[in-house]
Amino acid sequence: MNLYTELVAIDIGTSSLKLVAIDPGPGRQGYRIKKLAASELPEGLVGGDFTNPYISDVGAFKKILLELARKVKSSRQGFVVGLPDRWVKLHLFNMKLSEAEKKSSEFLSWRIEKNLPIPEGMKVAVDYQILEQDPGSEEEQYRIMAAAVKKDLIDILSSLTTELELEVMAFDTSSLGVFNLFEEVFPDKCVDQTVINLHIGHETTVVKAYRKGAVIYERVIESAGEEFTRSLGELDSLNADCAQKAKEKEKFFPTNRAEVVELLSKRSRIEKIFGNWFREINVTFRFFQEKHTLSRLPTIFMTGGGAQIEGLAAFLSEYFSTNCMVFNPLEEMPLAQKLKPEESRLGPSFAPCIGLLAK
Image (cartoon, rainbow, N blue to C red; front, side):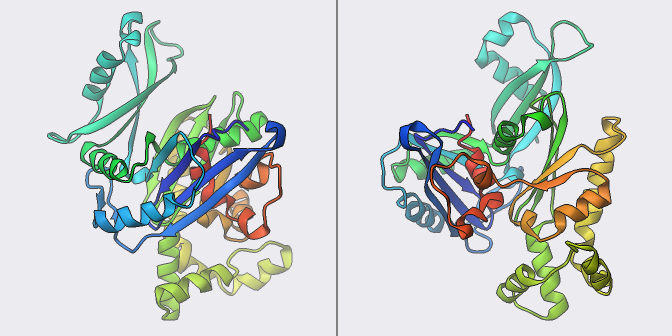
């Protein structure tokens, strides 16, 4: 696993900010986790989508960010900041490019931006990657991945981090780096194959499919951990904090045959908590299969806090007749020193943050 040790990663979520700093191990063998930290965000502080992203109180956000950044005392070259997936619009399309156009990044950026379905009058910052020459098409046709984010938001974050004297080397999309980690740990599952990352976050579930190392499909589903908690709270008349604790303790999915019978009596309850999410996931996966003419779903690797719901991976494996696994990069990294169990368990939630450091 090849990671930047001279940078600090900060992942902006809608419920928390996460930070990861990594040092080389002794003799540059493996890694040491310098710092894993998270700061909860007040409800409604960070939110919105691509067309209307927001930080409702920049002063409050600035204070939380500064306190988190101060937890890394050693000097680093700078920070890489991950933006919520719902703020960033990914576009995948084909474009005819000459050799001269490929070498002119400024002209290419202009052409790509003109190809994006951006609302009229909306100013965006655009980054792009030429993925591959489009197979079976004209010689100069290329597959392009472009990411757009509202420029006002980048300006706010750039100004804020400058005020805090945090040198930001790059803004990135939170979940894209997760695949790079997975590919290094399980190359046999990725070479010439398709895999799906199912990231179950706080407000959204992000589905990204990769083939030969390139994104071929993405969908952001507006249903995730927060909805599970809210539904459970409504069923049991609990406030948000109590519902969250109850969700973490309750068993929803069987992990052995005996529990299958035991949990049958809770089928209606489970449907009320997870039913909407299951329907959205099912529609998303079926559409993906049809779009890419796949007889069965490829391997699914789960990340995010929701991935840690006991028994969910096994349930989805059975339901979709494919291999579904929880990906915990903290358990897969070549670490020079073992983490405490309570730290190691955070791996799926911190996967996007760690992925920001992937080379």
